[in-house]
Length: 421
Image 1 (cartoon, helix red, strand yellow):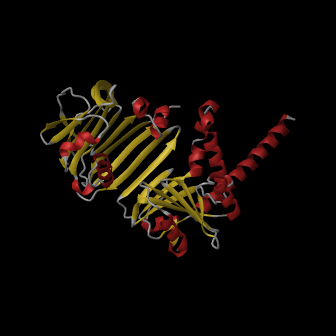
Image 2: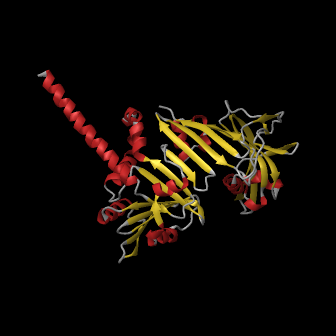
Image 3: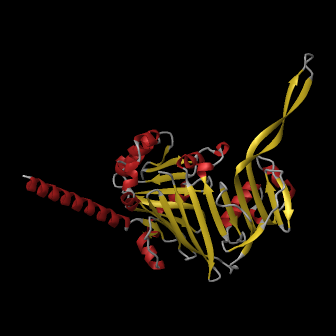
């Protein structure tokens, strides 16, 4: 009897494994047929099935109490993958276009138009819009940074780092299927493979990044080809990556890091073209400091005469400092552009701004890391815990990224990110 049970159980498991493996291979084949534009400049791929299979144990460890507040999100994901009328492949491909480098697009096949329409009507009743009744063309604004357009055959998705109107770009994509090719054939032309859970490749071969995610930890590797040769060592302000909440520095000129230049311009309220820098750092200390703030209020006396009163309050604020070396317009006004007061000192050609008035002896040391980032969101200031930062703080996310110059122009990238169990 026991022998029969063992045989039946083995056969059942073998059949289930065969069915599961066959389903996995079919989805792999479907992924090979996902389209990107022939004009793609960057391809981002996410291996959905491999991510799930390689992280089954960590997903099963999650307690219901930890995810009870995400039931609606999980239901949305379940419906999106199984009841959206879309062919969701095992690996998703996103791409950028020459004229829209800051935007990412994806093209998915529609397997059932009526089901697809029903999914978006049910989940986004106020955001869905009819564009062309004859073509069945619909637009959906999922988020201010994410838009969708779909017809009876394909769906085009656009994600932006700004807030542009993406409908025109998505419509242009759907109108020209002859300008598409499969992501696999595009990769074969260039000579790279999708061998990580997440890959990011520029098709001019100047950037290749791979990320593997297992057991609540992500491993990051990559190579970045710079436009000019860089020295292997440079001077930086001495920071405390092992004890600080956040440590970041870059010794690369803004010409090499346009994204960092745009972020700095946005934060400082300047035009990117007016900013030149070859060093910047940011430090958030676990300690806090105090600042005085004047509160001015207006009222009326008994005779209805306008009166003004002021009150000086002492505030506890995070201890933050940043260093800059370069040129920028309106340098004197920089500290006032932030919520906190920043007090500026200059050491050689470095401008150091800090929320603390305490004068500290600044030391400068040599480093082989052109770009470095270490952040512990578990110790993130409570006053900054909002949106994604609140989620990262609750997960006690830690990120560590380091880099080295190799052969003059190649920047090698290594790092990891982890969350608490």
